[in-house]
Image 1 (tube, one colour):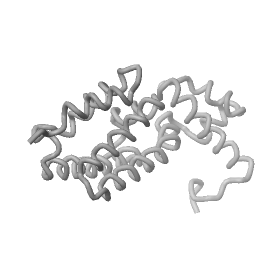
Image 2 (cartoon, rainbow, N blue to C red):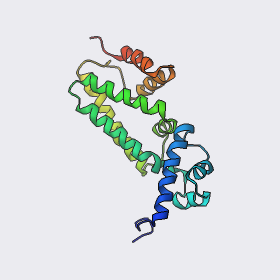
Image 3 (tube, rainbow, N blue to C red):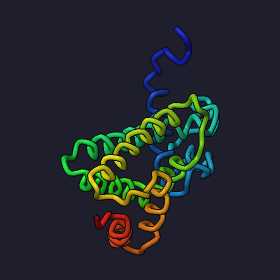
Image 4 (cartoon, rainbow, N blue to C red):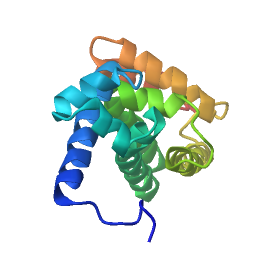
Length: 181
């Protein structure tokens, strides 16, 4: 049994959970480049404990955001399960925008590249595949502009989140990309 496979002592498990929770809060508010000592303070542990549990920032980011990417995966699966392709596309975009406007760290995780072997990159790649299917499905139904591409989602997210009321901004953006055919 390796060190990574050995069950954690109760106090070590609590420290790890506190660090991940603190990282979600701090990274969510300030982004993934936020000071690690702030995370350790918020978790009420020493900075050495943080580095003992998470030797690199990338390790902590992965522990904090892999569950969020799993939530995003559930959103893509719900979108694909919608009978109406436009409703599925809107569900995906609306929930994604909501996640991004409320969580700066999530936004950064979505646009940054991590080690290709990391759980983050694998989850992002799997989500990208489902997102492409959501787009293709809406285009095949004739409800999404045929020239819309996955890269255009960055414009959708930026446009929606730039508005004071992101829901109104999103409605304007969606109106602009909906096919009128």
